[in-house]
Image 1 (cartoon, one colour):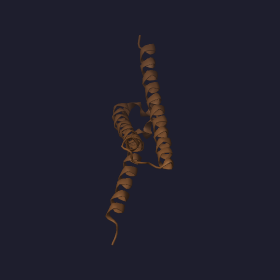
Image 2: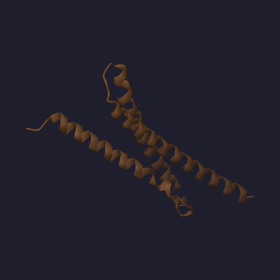
Image 3: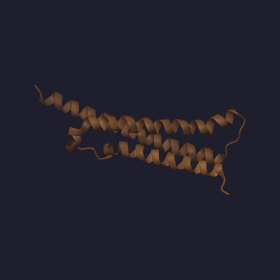
Image 4: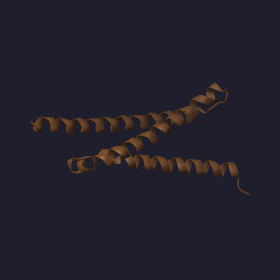
Length: 118
């Protein structure tokens, strides 16, 4: 007979991984955004907002999972804490990069419209 707790953990990890892949897919157009994609900017904006929201929710959840048990007098292994913090910081750097890229594209488009429309 299989352990139900092990199956539910595996299901949780699988769903989390699937949602992370989905969130990265949502923000992926901003990795290779060019002038040809400008016509679909509104759709990409919505994708960006949803993808970044999912990524930030997961980073917050992971930080809570690692830091909250410490305050509740439950030990979290050092390896797990370091791994989750490293993963979380990596995702936060990715989120900051994507936001910077989106702002840069937005400002570039706004600049080109104002300089050539007189």
